[in-house]
Image (cartoon, rainbow, N blue to C red; front, side, top):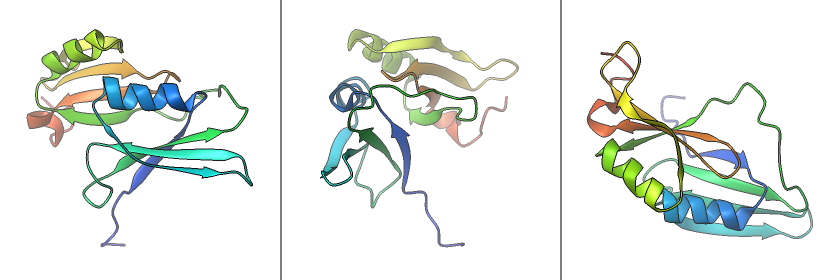
Amino acid sequence: MANGRILHTMIRVGDLDKSIEFYTQVMGMELLRKNENTEYQYTLAFVGYGDESEGAVIELTYNWGTDSYEMGSAFGHIAIGVDDIYTTCDAIKAAGGNVTREPGPVLGGSTHIAFVTDPDGYKIELIQNKQASAGLEG
């Protein structure tokens, strides 16, 4: 599978319009495409920072009539690299987003991170771009 590539991460959402608004207006992504399946009663919306041919995106899945899901304990977070974590968090807060962990160094290291929560409670980790490929090392 050496030629494999991550295409998208799918998350289930309870209010598709609210989620699209969050990922586009608060997180600065684009709505890339939206598909509705009337036979099986679901709608998919793909959001990202660029076309799917250029990188991974997020698939928002709305199952008609389902307005919430249990988070469970297996899913951790989506990670997004940003150029300036401090101004990004300020912009997210100004747009009505919920920064749940203010930007700063990770415990025991020097990589700067922050956490944001989306309307469904999914955690999004923001990592300073210049440190993103180093993981959470010092």
